[in-house]
Amino acid sequence: MKLREVKRIKLVPLAPFHFDATVHKPDHFPSADSDWQPGARWQTMFCQGKKLGLKLENKGTVSKPEIILHVWSNTDLSNDFLKSLKEEIKYRYFLDLDLSEFTRKFKSDPFLGPIIKKWRGMRPLNYSSLYEYLMIGLVLQNCTVKRSISMMQTLLEHYGTLLEYDGQKLYCHWQPKSLKNVSEEKLRSLKIGYRAKSVKRITDSFLNGEINELELRKKTKEEQRGVLLDLYGVGPATVWYLLFDVFHHFDELNHISPWEQKIYSKLFFDKNPEKPVAVEKLLKYFEKYGEYKMLAVHYLWEDLWWKRKNESIPWLEKLIRV
Image (spheres, rainbow, N blue to C red):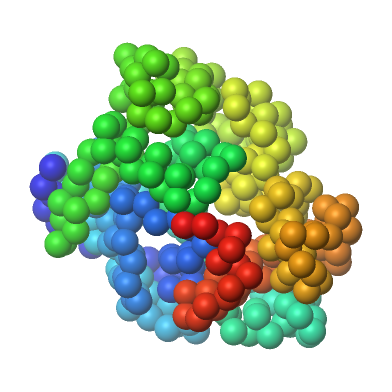
């Protein structure tokens, strides 16, 4: 599907705002729905029944941020639609996040302080809808990064839509209705294994109206947790990510997967990843960051992956296995 540019929207994030460290996360596995280069991110998006090609272009500085959001579509877009799109982008990219209290509290922390200064204005990022994020969570379960990349690519090729815009060819994520008449057996034939049942069951939950992302945003954290854990195939690790990235709970850190346990052990305690620090000890260590403990971990984690982008970190490479 070839798209044409229909609108440019000015976005002004709350300062400070670090564009590249926010819109590009080196720890995310590469996916065919987006691309990045310094100063720009291309991202496909399904919004209110429309397949969009987006480009976020940096036009400001950390202290005086400004983004131009370029919107490509194959149809005209109403002013009401564009207003709604703007608000959704602001929500997913945390553009209105006030980092002043977080910075004030921890700028003198010997470990976290220098990283806050280095990545001043960095925000978490969630470019996906709740349904899309759940699908990403499923392909990440119990396998190497290389296999996760392969499974997502296969699903995008079969059920996504290839969009062409601004010199890019990127897939727009499939939606629940795309899998309405797809059997579990057909999904298994795509070599996604036991995840086929979870993909089908979660998709059915959305098709049947059992879960609504916008309504869920209005619930308390514990209400959100309960709804998410009720979804077939969704466990504590996935819910932890969802509550932080999708629902913006910066204190959500009560579970650590074995993979993160190994990395945290080396990063925070300089221990052999194959003989990791106990999860209970790691969780207790992060308590000092209080209501911002997951945001603090995000800063420390992203700093590691940006280092890995620019230099070899042998112990980390052994754990990634791309």
